[in-house]
Image (cartoon, one colour):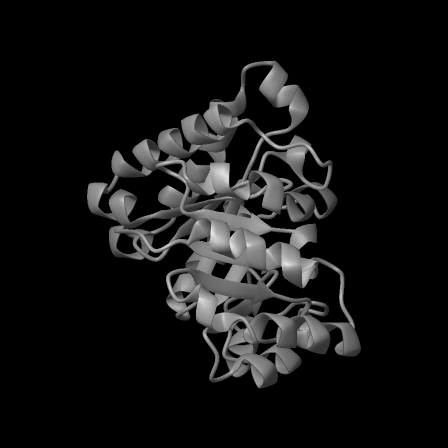
Length: 251
């Protein structure tokens, strides 16, 4: 039985004051989250604050990216796995569409980041997703398979059991649009089958999250789908009441 995970990706949002208020609102309600894994993913400067406020709570935390470089060194602007571990991060997002598009990350770079994360005891949330043009051309699965196969071909079989996938259709991120329940289930089922072709056990335990304008109004329908194991939430994770509602929908 897979335990659902709801992760809040704050993106480039937050301040010391705002973060404290949000986290305090969430931790006051943590008794309602016992059946769901909850993680907050703040920008790098706020990882220390997250560690301070979330230690000894039911909530976990993680980072928004990780370097492809396995060791520290002369890599200005990069953040290593060892640095994330200094802040007791449990998760790290890799391959988010905004990183793939704006920073031109390749599928192989994303796979390398996932491998480095796992080797250092971090759980990578690996984002995959297609653009509107690719969907309209009927290329959704070919795009997702290409992105996923890069990871499958880079990791060892034991490492696959530490992977988390997040399906984020690019056309639904921050647009207010969301894929239909049927579209989401079809993609999640296809991704699980793709992993099962390499390792059936890993596929059965694999958490596949949905991300793409997840909000209280659609969360229950999405979380009820058989192959949806939680959500990677953007804007709604910045509003305590909305994020709590999404978590409860996953319970």
